[in-house]
Image: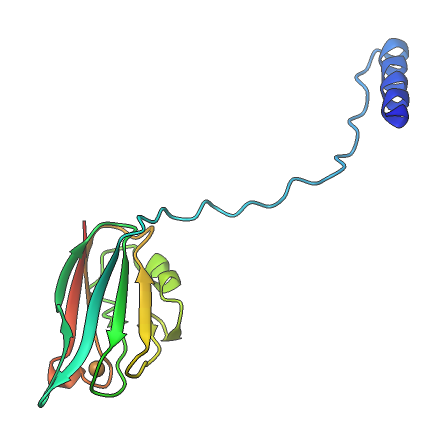
Length: 152
Ligand SMILES: [Cu+2]
């Protein structure tokens, strides 16, 4: 308190004598660097199962429509290792960076790590443009394990 009063007094004297404005006191605490606000999430979750039925490997459901900010949990149910990998040339323009950031457990660009039975891949589609996001399972793509999520 006392120091503040003294500083204020000195400042007033400077103003009174010099006619110039008092020098700005250095900020005691530099303003914290604030990241851009996190993209809004809705809290809504959807589940996609990753399963093997006979010789067939698939996402169930293979097509899903969600709202921006929804979370999709891909659950490894059967059939060994699966992942979720987006086609770079079939996702909406300008979405790659946000989508890449949304994949928390990655093995490459736009590609989640492989997970086994009982494990999940969680992707929250926050801050991504609306449109269709097509994806595939790296080990089972040639066996037709593909899917699409439409973000409204
Ligand atoms: Cu698979």
